[in-house]
Image (cartoon, rainbow, N blue to C red; front, side, top):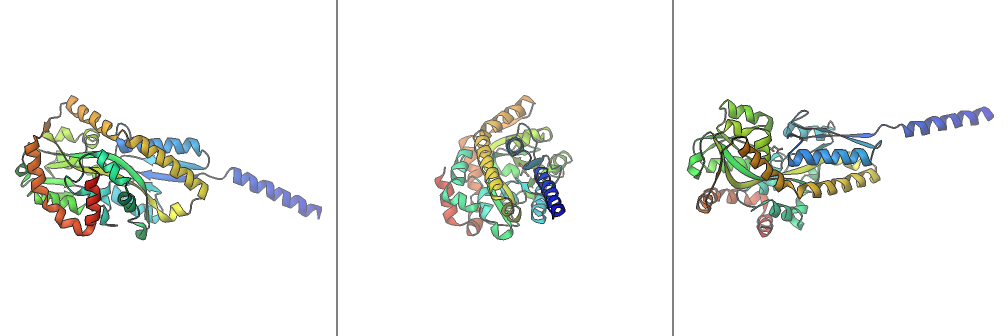
Length: 326
Ligand code: LMR
């Protein structure tokens, strides 16, 4: 009997030692942009830093920036396969999973990133977070990048200047429609391939935010950048419902709290970061062209028919809520 008690005590010690040494939960977070000087790169790095400090020993976030692990399409597949735990693709990359996010690609819908922020925090914007639950993807929140600018291997001042040119677009049918409406030829392409495609003339132009244009050096291989502010590029922080629901409740609550705090902190300075990147483009010798109010109105008018094409997928109520946030 005494032997049995001793054995059980020894097993208990071994078990608690195992519990103390239990491996932390690993969260691999994949994204495609540069880590520093970029709204998403900085947000992801801060999230990892805070989790790794505050939940040390329990959770470890490993960030893979710059498409080093996956491009965005593959990242979403990897989340569903359980090979990846978090990603932050742009809202234009979810075409395969929902049509609701098409709202974010409508041209000239939001006036600025502050309007996007108001919409995302409104009842309708928060409702959109649940759009992919039936596909096993759980949206945890939004991270901002900013307004998109347009560039090509020739000056773009009037909408007709884009006619006949090949433009790289993200994997979104609304973005394809935008460029077709301009009489251009859109080509869906992964972010990591854009610089090479511009350099080699596979495409003539592209659209992106100042932070992406500067950190990926697109300005080096373009005639100039037109400050069109014609659309937005924003991110969804996403995980799989299976992974998230399987986390211990206290850990999940801590992660959600840290994520909310990091998002608020970094989102409030995304516009500032983009302005700094615009200045860096100029300082590096990139050409920046601005549009007069009349010229901008011409682009807006030319692209207006795209809204009608996608209203059915998005819902007029959503579009009205977005407009009300301006
Ligand atoms: C793009 O593909 O142009 C962007 O979605 C990249 C990014 O993550 O900002």
